[in-house]
Structure formats: C-alpha cells, structure tokens
Amino acid sequence: MAQNDQLRIVILKWDRLYGDLIRRHIWDVWPNAIVCAFQQGIDALNEIQDQTPDLFVTGVAVEDMDGLEHLEPFIDKPVPILIVTSRPNTRMFEMLRHIRYDGIFDGSSEGMDHLPVALRHVMQKRHYVSPSLVPFLKERRSVTLEALTEREQIVLSVIGDGSDNKEASKRLGISHYTVLSHRIAIMRKLGLHHSGELMQYALVHGYVVITGKGIYRPGFQRRIGLPTDRRTGGRKANVRVPVEEEAEATPFQS
Image (cartoon, rainbow, N blue to C red):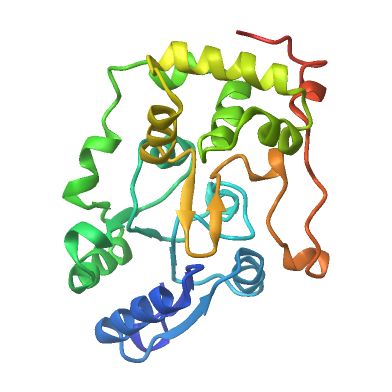
C-alpha cells in the first residue's frame, strides 16, 4: 500500500454530487490523497487499468454498465473495494454474491458522517458491513427468486415498471402472447394477484430501479437494450438479445 500522503483512490458514482460528497469525506481522513471521481464506468476502469489505486469506492448501479460489470475485473485482484449504496434490495445482494468486495456502506441508514469509519476498515483490510445490510447477507429461507427462471426474471424487469404486454413485447422482441404467458407464470409463482403488486415486488426486490435519469434494470440492461453509451458515440447500443433467440439454446421453462 502507498503511504498516506500518496494514497490514490478512485470513486465511481453516477450521481456527481454523491461522488463529490464521498471525495470530501476521503479528504477528511487522508488530506493528501489523490482522489479521482468518475460518473461513467468505462472512464473509471480505464483510469484503474492505467494505474492500480489503493482503494476503489463505487456504487452498485452505474449508468453505462450492466449489473456489476464494473466490479468483475477485480474478482482476482487485491484492490480494496468499498461499495456505497443508499437503496439496498435483495436483487442487488443476489448479484453481489458472485463479486468480491471488502465493505458495503449504507449511506441512507448510517448517514454519510459515518463513512470515514468504513473507509478506514477497508483500507486496513478489515471487512465492513453496515448493520442495516446484515439481513440481506443472510441466506434466504424463501426460494421465491430461485423459483423464477432467468427468462422470467428478464420479463419481470420489463413489466415491473408498469409496461403492458404489448409495450413489453416490443422491448423484448417477442409476441405479447408470450409476455402474457410469462406474466401469468411470474404472478403465480410469487403469489401476486394484480399488476400493482407485481410493480411493488419488482421495485422492492431491485428488478426495477427508478432514478431521476430514468428507469434502470440491474443485471438485464443488455438483454433489453442499453441506455445511451459513450462507447458508441452517444448512440443507443444495439445489443438487445430477444428472449426467443435464447430459447433455441435453452428450452423454455414455465
């Protein structure tokens, strides 16, 4: 690790003001640290590739990354990682089970004034978890999420914002009858009775995240079309994979 006056820290938060707030707290702990803050995942990863930082502080949802793509390069690397979030949900922790991180801080429950404690823990290679997040880390007794096939979870991430069958069919590239079939199966498995309950479930469990910039579907962006991506010169990335194309390789499971 570098000396305190040479610490190099990279922040990745798509909310610029949130990133600036984290940077100020870092300087409160290490006044001479070199802190680089980014809103786009591709920019942060390029910076990290050029020079490995002493600490990587990041959020979960990043606008130009699908799910936790921005954390995948660090699975086998020793860089300390602190995740800072303000909207924990079960979907987020499902994805985090497959990614390495050293600490996770809940800014909404602890308050950002407690962030320096988490920063010091992670830099000292001591695992840190906000008390409010401990229940999410425990193995679930319910098998609700496992009961949904991957294809059904993709459909849920689309209809979970209130889209009707025709709107969802256009986004997914399948017929609205197929969407209806998935919708019925999803509601049956989850014990839901109307679309309002389905929307609430999708929001609470992180299949749909609504922000000031629009609707984000963690883990499924590439299946249903990415938002504007700087790597394509501002054009919407054309990487949609229709659900029915996947069915050729994997038989449909109801």
